[in-house]
Each structure stands twice: as structure tokens, then as C-alpha cells.
Length: 127
Image (cartoon, rainbow, N blue to C red; front, side, top):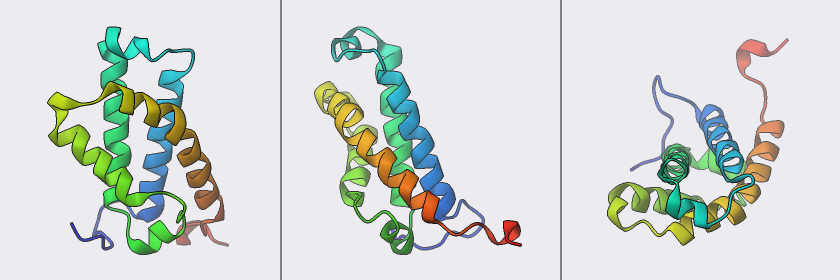
């Protein structure tokens, strides 16, 4: 899928914000939880998978210019994870989901917060 500026949809800044919001949701979902909870709590499992899918879908539509603002993120891996979660739903590895939530999401949050903090304000909010 080509990554070009969409017409009428969210722009790169908004998509990074969607990714950040979903990543913060993941952080909240796993707070005070254990890996074993994924096996026994289908609501937690579905919530994590959905939030990770949202992150990947938004990432897939960020342009190269937008990606350059958070170049430390493994954009291809984020999109690939989304594709697996969507298309191989019957074979999702709960250990990998948990590792993404615990290890990758905090790094992603930091990178997205930094990128958005440095992003120029929208035209309508300038002086």
C-alpha cells in the first residue's frame, strides 16, 4: 500500500496521535497484570490485540516524511505485526503480544511523544 498523503483522512500528525493514544491504552491495560492474564482474560487479550492493530493500521498510512519524524521506530515491523494480528488471527502468539506490550510499547510511547512535541502546530493554531 503506498504511503502518500491522504485526501480527507487523518494527516501524519493525527495518525501519530492515534498511535500514541492506542499505545497508552496498551500500557494501561497491562498495568498490574501478568502474562498469565492473557490466557485467562479474553477481554484483556482482545483489547491488547485491537490496540496493537490500531497502531499498525495508523503506522501503515503514515507517509515517509511523517515516519522520518520518529525514525527510531521500526515502521516495517509495526505494520507487519498488524498484518499478522489481522490475517493470522487464529494463530496469534500470546507471548509475542505480551512482549510487545511490555517491551516495545514504552519505547514507542517515548518516540511518539518526542515526535509530536517537536511537530509544528497546525496552520489554524498559528499566530
